[in-house]
Length: 267
Image (cartoon, rainbow, N blue to C red; front, side, top):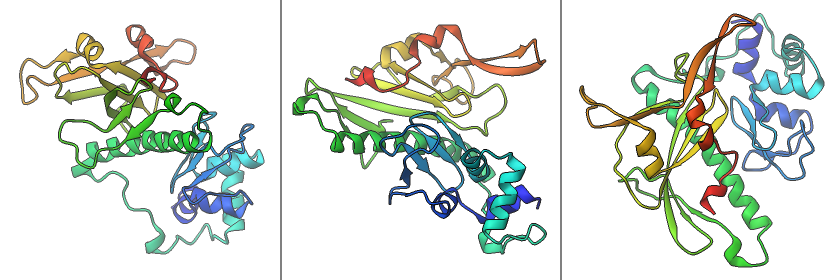
């Protein structure tokens, strides 16, 4: 193992944040040190951090590098020194992280990974709703997570007018094949009133919100094969940047109108 792998296997983002004097809430939320954060908006997971305010993200080495203005190598060296890690001696087997995406369950694991990011965001909104509730109760937004999912419903939202909408969350992680950052396939769905999709691409750091009708108007339906009758939608394209000669994923123009930076469509 090289220095980077050894450090990341031995130190979590939360351990580093606490070691360097940042106050971490029980839920793993902290005030983001990378922008003027009045209320905790950064989530510390075991292997990565993500700020819902400024979008800062990365692993434990990225976190320390940004915190102290260091290069990645300098940050890794600092972590090794501060946590007493011998770069030439790998950590104990128990400290080594397990394979993140076992082959047999890769697709489901990747989807769950990104769903956790969105769920963290929803939980953050719930916390803010409680702490900074509006003076008029009906101005609030209530989010419910079903205990059993039989119809592709990940959460139910009570709108300001008292009506309810159902939401299905679809997510793609950084680990998907190049060019497929926002490809969502094998979706079973028929037009449903008051039903929305939330699509999220971790690599593009983009979210799209579509109603049932909008999704059906934009999606492609498989005509043959094992997924016959199921639907898919491909939000991104993949083109070569002429300046640097490297392929880069981007949101297709026809889908730009569905990009969302918050959940205001649900109000």
